Each structure stands twice: as C-alpha cells, then as structure tokens.
Length: 434
Ligand code: ADP
Ligand code: ZN
Image 1 (cartoon, helix red, strand yellow):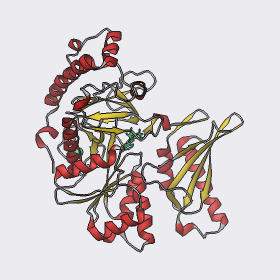
Image 2 (cartoon, rainbow, N blue to C red; image 1 turned 120 degrees about the vertical axis):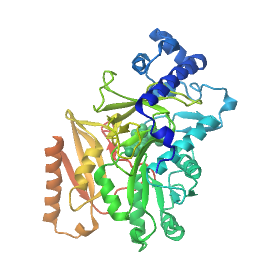
Image 3 (cartoon, rainbow, N blue to C red; image 1 turned 90 degrees about the vertical axis):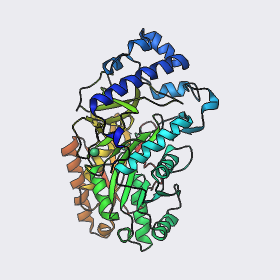
Image 4 (cartoon, rainbow, N blue to C red; image 1 turned 180 degrees about the vertical axis):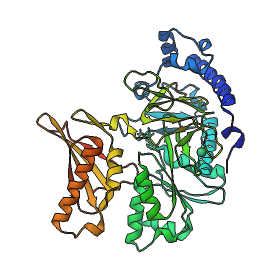
C-alpha cells in the first residue's frame, strides 16, 4: 500500500521538474533570509537566478555540521522566530549539539513523510505502534509519534528506558509494530527472554529500525529472534529527523528518499566532486521544502550509494543503500579503512558469537591496535577453553581475510558489554588517552 500515490509514484521527469522549481525557490528564500547563505552565494559569484536545472546544483556551496555550530543556536533559521513552533537538537554523538527549528508547515510535512514511511514499511491505520525512540530533543520519538498519528494508527508513546516494563507493555497491549534502534530491539529481546516471554508468540509483526548503522546480517538475526519483519528507516535532525528515507517492505532493498522534499547527491568525501549514480560515497542532501532551517547541500557524512533502478513496489523515488557508517566512524588501522558495520557482518556470520560487540582502538607505541570484543552466545559460554580459543582464531582470520586488517579478538562474558537504550556505541577510541 502506498500512502501518497500521486507523489510517491511521480514519473522521474515530473519529479525533476518539481525539484528544479523547489530548488530555485529554496535558493531565493535562503539568499533573502539567511546571512550565511547570502555570503556563500556572493563568494561563489552566483545568485538564485543562476539555478535553472538540477545540473546547476554543483555550483551551490556545501553546508557542513560546523556551519550549524558556528551559527549556534538560531543563526541559520530562515523565518522570523515567532514562526518557529518547535525546536529539536541532535543528540551530539559527534560533538556539540546542533539546533533545528520547524514551522507548522515543516511539522506537517514531517508527519506526512513519516506516515508515508510507516506505510512503506508495511503498516496501516490498523496497527498499534510501540514507540521506543526517545522523546525529547532527539527527533526520533516525536517524529515517529506524529507520523503514526497522521497514518491513523494507534501510537503508544513509551519512549526509551525501563526495558523490563517495555516487555510487559509489549505483551499486555499487543503492539503489532515497534520503533527503536536495532541494537535496542536486541536488548528488549534479552529482557523478554529473561522474563519468560517469547516475542514470537506476541502479535508483534513489524520493526521500524534506524538511527544507527546496522547490517543485513543483523536484520536476519533480529527477524528470527523476534518473529517479525525488520525494516530500515533513515534520517537526521539537520535534514528533518526520521523519515528522510525508508525501505519498502516489498523489496527490502534500499531506502526510498522522499525526493519531492529532499534532493540527494553522492560526493567524493575528499574532493567534494559529485560521483556518478551507483558509486559509493558521502550522501549530500538539499532540503527542498523546509522553511525553519532550510539547508543547501548538507554533508551528512554518511556513506551510501544511490540506486535509480525502478523498484517493484511502484515508488519512483531513488533508493539509498543501507548506510555503511559515518565517515567519522571509519577507523584507519595501519592504513586500512574499516567500518564497524563490516566487523558486525563478520561476527553475525560466525556461529558462537553474539551480536553484542565493541571495538576498542588503542595505540601501542606508534601503531594503532584494534581489539574486537565480542560476547559469547549463552550456549557457548560453558564451553571448553580450547573451543573458545578456536572461535577467537576463526573470527580473527575472517577479519584478516575480508578486511585486510589484523584485529585482536577477545571473547567476553554474555551481557558484559553495555546495552544501550538508544544508539549503540560501537567504537571506543582510546588513542588519544594514553
Ligand atoms: P546525531 O548526529 O547526534 O547522532 P541524529 O539523531 O540526527 O543525531 O543522527 C542522525 C545520524 O544517525 C545519521 O546521520 C546517521 O549517521 C545515523 N542514522 C540514522 N538512521 C540510520 C540508519 N537507518 N542507518 C544507519 N545510520 C543511521
Ligand atoms: Zn520500493
């Protein structure tokens, strides 16, 4: 089922016509109302009148997270303060928080796009949605909340935390869908098992998971354990919040970016050059309709790829690949680039390892050393030492084979790695602490 058939299935040509019109209007708005952008346009020697096609996009300046920080808190807002009806702030995973503001129309668009996303993920107004994304400055909770209401579903605003109670609510209320981070779903699964509840016996059938990188292997693991269909949702507060793009349940192969509102590009993160369709690089997004804090060519630092081939679901909007990670999370271990998600794929394919892991990077002299700590699965726990050593060796060898780096692998006790109620912290970088 498609929420907004007219928009979601617009033929590419019409979609592009709409995008150009909105892009031009965006340029006019920021040029007139945001000092930062007017200066940037002047430095680049362009005016909004120069933007007449999508190929002119490349002449526009990038916006970086640092630009939001330099203009903290409200410097990039493009409307008078009294027109802003809500503020959010990024969770500050990578430094000082960045603040975003929404007009009433922005909030309505966001709810629409989340409703689209829920329906693409297989939900309808008949669903009961357990929303375990955190409510507050973080965009996850309220973003999903208003989307669920717009869809006409029933939303249970559980927010994050109090995991034991969440399990009881899942059982008692009989939610058919859950929203949270993929790592938190595994935490819930553990808590349920401990309480003697098999999630597979409950009405729960869909998980809308996002806000952090995860792999297809992780998806499979979660689907088996919880007896649900797990779909990927992507977003970031600077651009809107959750619902910038969403995987369709039909194909489960990439997330449709809602292109009538967001214009995506992939660039080479080093040179800033646009890359041809199909190549992997940094995702850059221009907000076409946002009023409160419109952004031009925002560098997300997320590594992905765009897929313009038609999708079996009938939606025409481009699909982005599962995000491999943020460029900031990329580890460079003795010259080799490694993303935590690559380690995750390997761990989940290895029998005996659990999906709970952490990567610790230290300095030994001048050399970077990577240690992968992975919890043993419960059934391996009491196994003989030599079997455990063999398992460590096997993981180490696979990492070397597939990623070309030497990692120290350390099996740790079940439940010894800290669980997160929101975004999991996969990397502990101790390189600057010694
Ligand atoms: P912060 O930047 O403080 O974490 P946000 O909550 O806005 O604040 O986080 C947005 C980021 O979360 C994205 O840029 C991306 O790195 C990550 N993210 C969101 N959804 C996904 C997803 N489905 N897959 C991978 N990463 C995601
Ligand atoms: Zn699709």
